[in-house]
Length: 268
Image 1 (cartoon, helix red, strand yellow):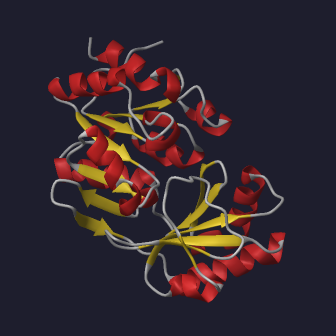
Image 2 (cartoon, rainbow, N blue to C red):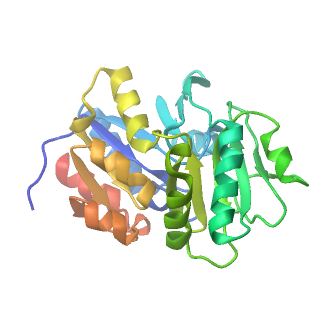
């Protein structure tokens, strides 16, 4: 395998990639990332979580600097606790998109991530959060999901698999939204044309760097746009088959310090 040159940016997804069980980062992974930063690289977290769902993790690992959140809809500056950029999903379009999906596959359950540094995650009756550690507020009616600006919609189906629901949602919504699978039980609708790749490019521009000088680590199809904007994409051993097929290499799982294994090689 060809070893890429030392990258300028090390972009890491969180869930299933950098984080282990309990939202922890191992000492080995911390040391490998610190070595990369000491060598001149920038560590960039690129996550599907909205800002409120990521702050505790950032504090726990001592991360400082920009963070791409909400599938690329938010660029958050952790040092100053402010949003540098935010893109919202038109709520009428989102409601229309849900209607089109339901016309194809029958009733679905929905949730939304609100915009802002203190935006809430709202869930309608029947929706079950895939990540039990993230807080959510239950509402009584779907109409209540649209009470405030949102960055993305999360959709679940009582019978279809994640892959089946993702394919059906893409076919039904067209250019109303960007549809992606972010994790088990996590199919999401974001503003059309916005994804982790656009978020990575924006963060790289803030630093004055070429995003193609990035090595990116991920585990789910929502990381594919980030791989496409990077010079080298690394899938975890536990990654979805679609991402593994598109990766430049596959490392060990998140529980086995797969990120550290690659960074120790690059920044020996």
